[in-house]
Image (tube, rainbow, N blue to C red; front, side, top):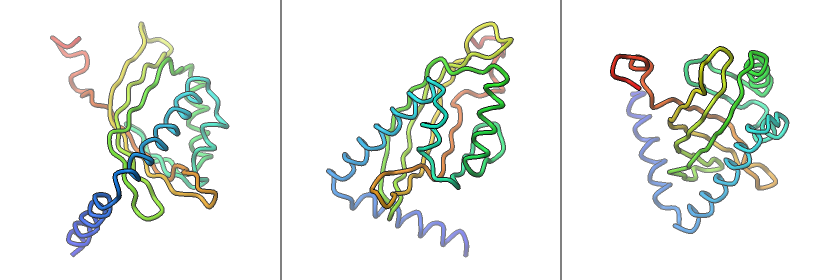
Length: 165
């Protein structure tokens, strides 16, 4: 029964997205692109306050290879631990590929590239992957991030395997 409900909800979400006027999706795409650009800039400048201002207070993050994080304070703790360990983001880009509205939420799916400097690593660590972000429309009309997840396209079981560069 639960599976049927999930299927019905999924079909309804896609039906609502498909029914949205083309102009509305273009507007949403521009809006999430602007948020992504601002977030990338803040990440590269290590502007923590600007980054976290883009999230609702009780946001959820489902990071790659890490436990779930709930709320801005958990995000801040994770950021501080990574920065304290000497990790630095050298470059970051994101490219939204799909966006749609679902009630007061906007869902974005895209792909990213990132380059990180890690203490002890002989060279920068480069990664490519995909992400999904759920935004909630605020009373002032802005969008803030409610939930996010991302994961690498690179198979960690193949990294460093013979014949892999």
